[in-house]
Length: 479
Image (tube, rainbow, N blue to C red):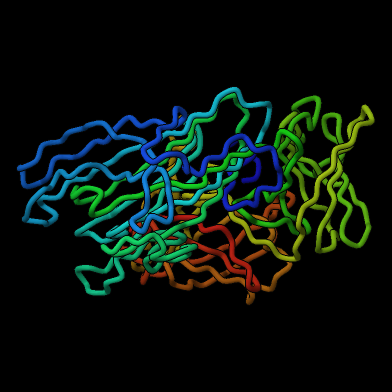
């Protein structure tokens, strides 16, 4: 499995603190009201036809300017969400339309780098309805042009709890309460269902001299920005052109742990590109060694699985003490590059099929045929021919043929089985095994059963918990 994941290429990372300071772009949009910005564009909006047959599909332009919040305390880029298309009752799902639009930031002439961080404030304004089946779902996403999807989720400001109106959101995990993880609520002066500010940060591999970021919404109803809208503020982009960054190889914001798998991103890390020939991993690969000096002052060479000018994949040496560690890349030519990283005793992270730390789990599954001990493989995901195209495959948990799921990650070993939990869509499931994977160095495995009460859950978040630490949420699909 580690070999498979290595073949997926560089990992995209989110919620990772920006540990490098080369700022590429910043805008707080506090210029004169109505100002436009040449780096910000929109291809306009599109709308679907409604099922009642009274409104056809259509499209139109979308202005990209700064505006003032309702209370005049903030000036930001917005408001986005499309024009009024459903202008009069009846207001019901048969007459509503879906309105989608994308606002794009394009940055050019970037200096050489291998990692980018984008941070911004997302303003979710008025009556977003999250996962509501009658008024939603209301979705928002961010993707890198030609690259990874950094976020694709639902948001909700609808606090009603009735069966018809219940509107949970999928940020930060499936079916969270409306406005979960908000940095501020009702601070912008909007009276119709209020407003929410989210502080979002994403870090991802990127090496080109042009960066395209697509901020998109897809909202149901079509009653215009007086009903549902959004905006952006304090957009900051920085890169690692000045230093390298060491992170978990698995997922966003996950720390390193002894015997866990890590990745380093930077410029000029190694003079060649080379993969380890197999197990066990060497401590010298290509033309470099990686020394890990732990918080106790002990230095150890890290096993290396892959080196290149912009990325190094490694295993944190066994025995590395917790705390701040210094990582030193030592070249055969005599040069040394250093950086620091956080090492914890336990740091659970899960690999995903798209190798970006989010979306469908890079998991395997099997079904035991009723009345026998014969295992049959069960698909968890299916991938297309392009990067980032892996999608979940619905798993039938069955009635009398149990399904067993194996998750692959890192930073999990060292905990007792009783200290490991797995939460799927808010429900705890039995954990059969948690520890090192038998073949690949640094790779951990968690085996669970998918009990019948999960039937009909759909695509839901799965989180592994270990001694108070939670993994990145990944997704599986249960029909």
